[in-house]
Image (tube, rainbow over all chains, first blue to last red; front, side):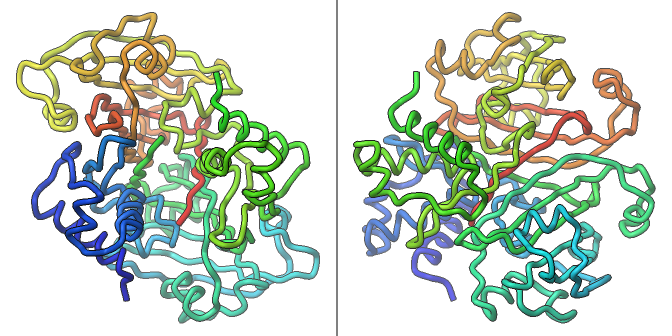
Length: 235
Length: 235
């Protein structure tokens, strides 16, 4: 169920699309929108923040609200940290689980990254992910078992974050993303149905709860032809 | 010259570094910081927003201010839209201008992207950019001459954005970034001293003024071994 400000954000977005607004076109002021929707100023501000975050609009200090270029169909919006599900929601995202196991023999870098001690255990997950049936990426993920208390194949075939938020009271906060272009190794190439040494985008992402506890360390290898990214960036 | 809130942000950052705070460590409250620095609450809030934007801290609603993982030396922070100069400021960034010319024969896609009409002219610029002497990327840029009224080789060897802000009263607002991994063509490989078909990261970036006028459309081809990226992402 959408909250009031989310409904308003959705409505403004539809308005922009229907009126074929272009980048740089000016939108009505906060006061006008507040009167139109008969809500408080703070509700309008929250709706606008959501639209700004998603790259739909831009607010120029003291000058007004402007439309941004929204040419981002088929692109993964990097700002939507809730995995890809939310950013590709007009496409069908499916997953094939290659491996899911609970392990205590954790690589040293993951121990450090997830702030773990000797004897702690994690879930280790390998998945292939598909958009509209085309392979998007391979994911190698470690989940801190202190936070992610239970996973099974059924859960990991869907949106893990939806499950965590709805059933585990885990609040996903922020993430650090590191990325670079690289070459595929033989195993990766086989999984992505490409050739060894073909290009790929490597992504290393750490997810934190809202209180800053790292709970997911993932290496993601993207198919260079099927994965395109978009970042709405601001000063 | 730094503004008051920028000085405070810098001071808090130094404090975090000196005390070897880790991701998830809690920082003093806004009230405590306000008393410590003897400034208004809004100055502290602006300082914290700057630190959050740069991925140094994270503010959890109703819960406090936390340190993030700051493992981003040598990484290009994608959020700093002011070109790379600002994000790699502990490194020496240099540029070699390959071509600079004023043209009216503008590709159709650029015409659309920069909202140009027939007869308008742009500056077309090709640069190689280096970090600490290592080649980082090739840049192919089109600048809308309505906004960027004058460029010469000397200016384009340095930070064009600093020049625009300081001498041209252009306020750089936001940017759209599209990227994907790809293969180098022969010409690009030669410029980057790599082999054809080696991987690269392709970046297409459009920069807008604070009032939403697109003024710079750039294609950037990054050297896959020398360019590493960082994004501090939040919900």
